[in-house]
Image 1 (tube, rainbow, N blue to C red):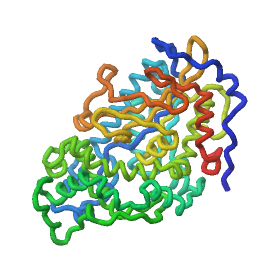
Image 2: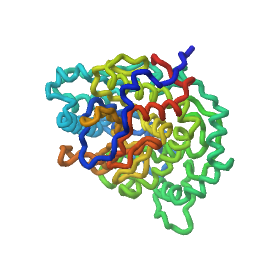
Image 3: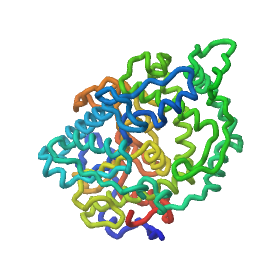
Image 4: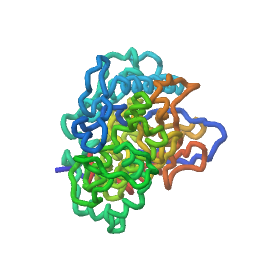
Length: 444
């Protein structure tokens, strides 16, 4: 039985809640801790080509290892591993500049906490990121909870209880009780997807029939039914559409020849257009308020408590690492990042992506900073990701040639300044209002 979380209004916060910082032309803050909530790297498709071929006129291209052997489904590619190491290398440079890393990797490793979901894709991503962040820091030290990690899958782990009928009603309510209306609302995206899958010009008239023996995923009814702890609501035909388009962004990001990206029919812009359908599913499954509250309260609670622990220097139940931990890296899935963003009402927009996309290797950052003039602690949120072409081209990252990034506004808290700073005390109170105490605990 879960321990209920009590209010986050800790007595120690009285020390942190001084006068609010005024917007300042110069940044007088010092970075004290950073929480990096990242997505796994570029991977092979989640379904094998034998299953994907039911959706397309032509076999999907093959993802291979360095020896040319076909990769298993849903594993990081060699290209994806390099991408992750490049990103870790950028954080190494940036955090040295910020004073959070000293450059002595073996010593710095003592102040770093890594945690990853228990799948080869995500643990390998974490290892590659560690290698870039701490190249001389020894073997990667990744915390992994076997099976369902309560931080990333609190429903599967039994920390949170999801009412599947409530979840179904919550999603259905967002769709006006008519999920099939999505077929007309997203008609251009579905039309492009069908033309790519069945290899004809998107403006062809009349529209060709589906090849014999193939499943036309774009024509399947969009219905709602109760799901499971992975996808809490089953969204009928939209689920098959997502399976069919899943490889496209990975083909592009993995550096495959143009002829193999959507069989030569998709540029980066076309990939983004088809992926509006993928983003739609993530939005419904993880940003819907009820679902965000149940599925993301536990990770939100641990993040907030870790920031308080670092600010006060005192151990706080339900936090990650120790009071001296400077870097916390949580590596999980786009579903986890989308859910946390939904819970806290966070949005971002980066070059080459649609709004709020949790891109391969991208990360949502929470920086704990202290004003050198007032002593007050603030939270600064941002989202960082290599652009699609940086992913594709294995672009080296430096302080002068960084990944794309943008500040993230925290509603009800952020100042109207360039970095949307948020006083820690206020951030804690806002989090306390949205975190469901029945869906989080002090331990897991």
